[in-house]
Image 1: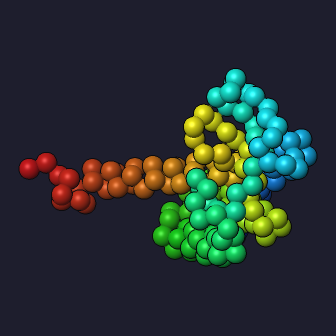
Image 2: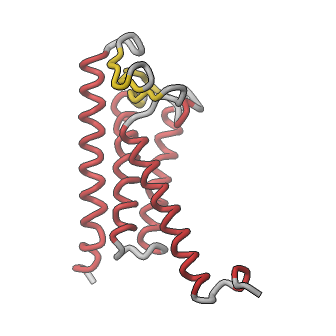
Length: 171
């Protein structure tokens, strides 16, 4: 049991660690290169459509709930605990896709939690057109959540194909 338990955590912890390191390094580089004042210097990547821009965010995604960093940090920690519990009890955690999904979500969440605890805000720096500015950690969370949704959908469709879901069975 100990060996199996270790095996199902190797990929998530490795992916989370790499994601956390890349996130923190990218934020440090942006702050050193474009800081200390936010939104004054930019690095265009694709004209003005995609650029690197240094920003502080005391809220959550799309800059909602600004100024509530302590509550958001606690909420993020609780969500992390819930994700770990869900992974341990509900997901087929021997699957690579489940392990990758959890690793991406953990790495991203930890990256933003580290910012909130260390700085009191999250460093955002990726600006794409009219879309709200975001960071690598946000991207990891979104990709992980998207993969999780696809995985759940695939499993539901597979169960429906095996006749386990009467509502989807043709009459």
